[in-house]
Length: 151
Image (cartoon, rainbow, N blue to C red; front, side, top):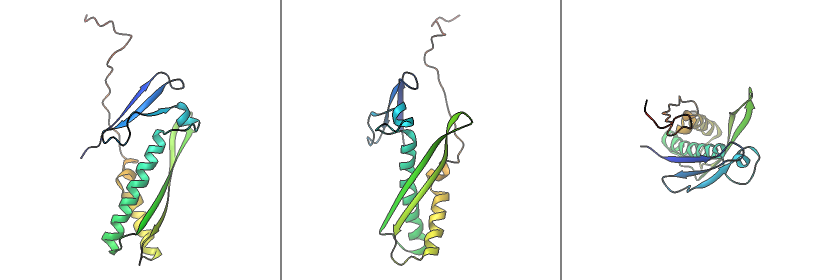
């Protein structure tokens, strides 16, 4: 199963702007820019989207674990993900992710809940992604350095 998202950026870092689109249509030409990412201007940014994905993934994983391990389907799980973007050694980096979860799980005790929450934190697909190797294919479609002539 593959999920697709697309981003387009035009211009320089501070004066440019971009759009994010997902194949599902959940995001369609959603704008993002320097101010939204680094200056708290209204709008979305990559770290916010990572946080949303992580909160959703974790909540689903926790629900599944509670049901599978303890036969305790939750009534409600609310998860907040805080993604920290800081400068590290002169470059911007995601330096931390903090999950805060509150759940209503009838019949569940604190020990079982914490066990399931820890397992979900370690094993939900987005948690594992944040530790995964990243592969890439890069293609320069056009360059001002090339004349377009074949030598």
